[in-house]
Length: 116
Image 1 (tube, helix red, strand yellow):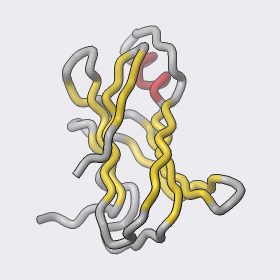
Image 2: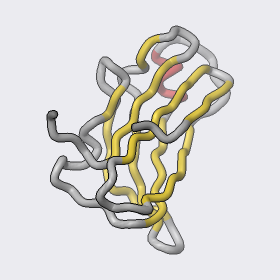
Image 3: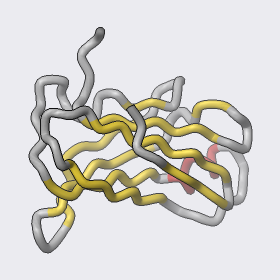
Image 4: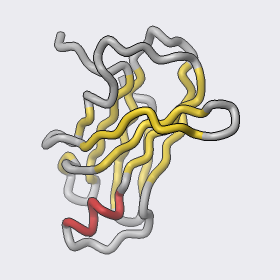
């Protein structure tokens, strides 16, 4: 298996049923009072961003969030949308586990779940 970031994400455009490529994403960690940026990325042709962190990176227990810049994605497609960005907070409870955050996206709705 190829090495991957300990935190990854995936965006599926549920309007088209296809992966959402070229979505800008940002990973942040909560420091107790604010969120601080850790990494930036862009989804690939499969809608995935497997390189947010270096594969050898370790994550600490704590609260994180991934921000998906959805307005830019839909504007590039000429589609009007409601959410300019989507923030998905999550908690790392076991630092050694892999955390995958999928986003199912349409112009006026979104959903998420803990992926594997």
